[in-house]
Length: 252
Ligand SMILES: [Zn+2]
Image 1 (cartoon, rainbow, N blue to C red):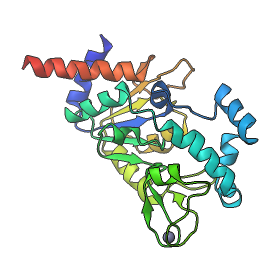
Image 2: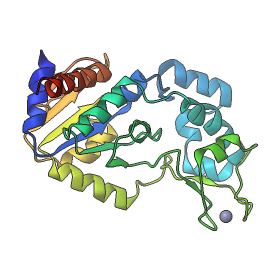
Image 3: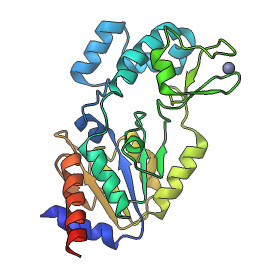
């Protein structure tokens, strides 16, 4: 069983970093909003594509529609809790087999599953603040507001602290993520192509010895750089590893 060999690789690793891509999130039942049927439905419903709406220019000019989309599509999806894949990730962290997790997804699934040392490169929907006074607001405040959510004090629109299209990723977060990847012996890529933005940004910092790619989907992935490629679901792969850990712990 492949999972077992990889468990050994993780045990032998001094520092293991996970790059958590959209595949793991899609397996968890989250819409990706930019591909196939989902993207077509978005255009039908709002008259714009996901990339057009979830954009800094659009946010500045069309807040009503931005927040309608944001609440109905992005925040609504958060009702789906982190599933088995994320729970398994947390277990592996509890067994000290994963040291850091880096993602560009904004659903905060890793942290909601209890994972720690997560770098959310594009922020999460759980962090929102007033651009004038800086007051922070929870996701629920945005979700439950009528129309555009306003700061109670300043009456200006509260900004979700997520990176929109057309915006740069926060420098501090990039630096932190790069430092994590530089430390890694093992880099475990879950549900992301090695040419995806997440991997393109991070692989340049990786000098370790074991790049493991779990494709998590049926798409063809560019995987030349990977030392080990596993064609299968990420959640099943993680669960298999986590079960292996528990069994080993039980046998000791
Ligand atoms: Zn304010």
